[in-house]
Image (cartoon, rainbow, N blue to C red; front, side):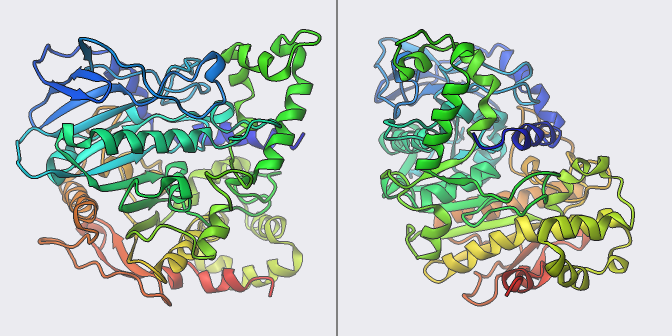
Amino acid sequence: MKTTMSRKVKLAAALALLPASLLVNQAAASQPAAASGLVVRTDAGQVRGKTTATTEIFNGIPYAAPPVHALRWKPPQAVTPWTGVRDATKLSSVCPQGDNPEAPGGSTNEDCLYLNVTRPAQQTSKPRAVVVWIPGGGFFSGAGSSYEASKMAARGNVVVVTVNYRLGIFGFFGYPGLAASGTYGIQDQQAALRWVQRNARAFGGDPRNVTVAGESAGGMSVCAQLTSPTSTGLFSKAVMQSGSCAFNWADNSQYPGQAADSPWISQSTVQQNGKEWAADNAAKLGCKPGQAVLDCLRAADPAVLVEDTLNFTQVAYGGTAVLPLSPAKAMKAGLFHRVPVLSGNNHDEASAWLTAFNGGVLTDADYPRLVTDMVGAADARKVLKEYPLAKYGSAAAAWTVVTTDRIWSCTQVATDQRAARKVPVYAYEFADKHSPISQPGQGAAHATELPYLFNLGGYELPLTATQKRLSEQMIDYWTAFARTGNPNGPERPHWAPASKKAITGLSLAPTDQGGIKKVNLQTEHHCDFWAGLGD
């Protein structure tokens, strides 16, 4: 079976990137809510939520049946209706995943297909736009419950829905004969979007005005939905943060020993991987002689499956109506839903992975070696000329810029270029180097924009006066886009859509770091160079 070691290295490194603030998520979830008379009728039954000073919140609403026993590795099924009023004041379990800051101790609870709805407390007669948030986490960790959405909902006058979906081996496993191999997590997201179509009006939302949004693996999921025929009509706008259709990585670029790859994998490959994995682990799984393999796998202890969840963290394409083509190929061919797009990265995205390379301590001699390991000797000369060490002051700084541009920024720009041929694209770069979740010296690293949009783990992290203003402007941009398809409005700089030839957008920083200003992302990140490398 294809290597597992690089993915286990990936897990250890990635968990170190998650905001420490998310550690409080479980504590926040365990706090009892005050009794409330706030009741809404969904298509499966009534739910009782809770109120805050600015919002009304409904947590832990099931959008699909628990995918357990015979429903493990099957497309999401309908919820069984309930009688009476269901308590929607507490957060649900996260989906099965290993120990990480969002799920201390991990989780083995497969009964996890729930969503959370936050709406402004202020009443209105006009239906509000709906933002559906898909969390990141490498397709092996994360939860919608980590993103408390009160400030986005209240300030932006939108309904926000945050979603759990199956992860890792539970969401992206494949095996011969499983028609939906490698797509269960993507189908869960679509089931949540269909729930929104059926129930948005009950919460004051407009099912005709839905934006699907996400960050990291959530942004890649948005791309999957943009290119999926089975998501037709489920949303009218898309937001991709630090994740895109063209996302991929080169050899040894995120972690030493890691092979070049992307989030997308052919269904035949994931099925073959699953077949080999099952054969190698039959004894551990408790399979009996003569027992059908899938029967054994569906009866296996989820705690045993979680141990190997990192073997299945790519989304399958081909052989399925969900993703007939890889999202990268579909976007390149123009086969995507014609909806406005808001898309961007963080300025120092790859700095969060620096510690994977000798703990982040690099010498001048390390820099050309790392570049050579990434692109080969012939192209290394070109990269070192384009990114001379002397320009950046240290090997660590130079390597961060190279890998940010190659892995993150230019793959996002490539997706933006393809989308801009057909739809409005609003490109950005988050550039606040002192986010409350930034690590020392890492600047505007991966995920550091999130506390400007959400209360992570249910807590509002401290922002300076200028950062708070940036947060307000970002929420205003994002929610204006959700309402109208155009992020512009009063009291913030104009944001022009990118052209088909040059991906220009906004650099988002507080006023004491230069403020919000226009930036040519294609030029800043040397994207024409990377597009031509190897020619």
